[in-house]
Length: 130
Image 1 (cartoon, rainbow, N blue to C red):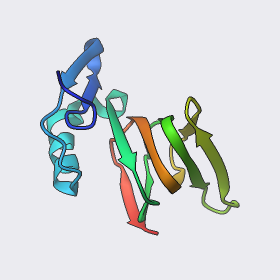
Image 2: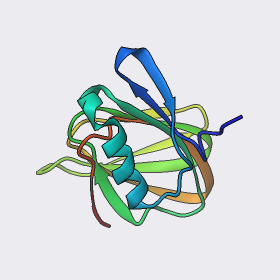
Image 3: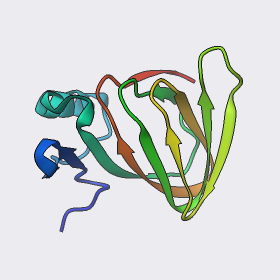
Image 4: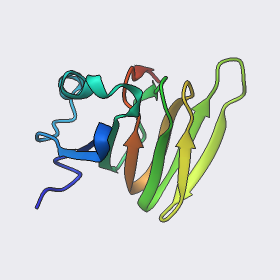
């Protein structure tokens, strides 16, 4: 059986769910994902799980849709930043979720270990160093 850790899902137009190739975690994988499913536009969603043992090293932003972050185990603190506004911090424990709205830069602090589920509108995702 595939795992969301190794083979994410793409939720696409026409209520489709497409198993993705092995997830390498590298930017090239995301570029190939965009090439495979870019035709679904802002309605496509990437569904993944990630295990974290340290804080993120970059910020990211999804300009075309919401991202749902659901904490499965452990705890993370999402740091969200809107241009021209103060940074907000949202701590998620197992069973909690938060939404990163379109255009909101976000990163996460992790103490110990955590696993999260992400449902992401990935079209146009941008990264910058933390």
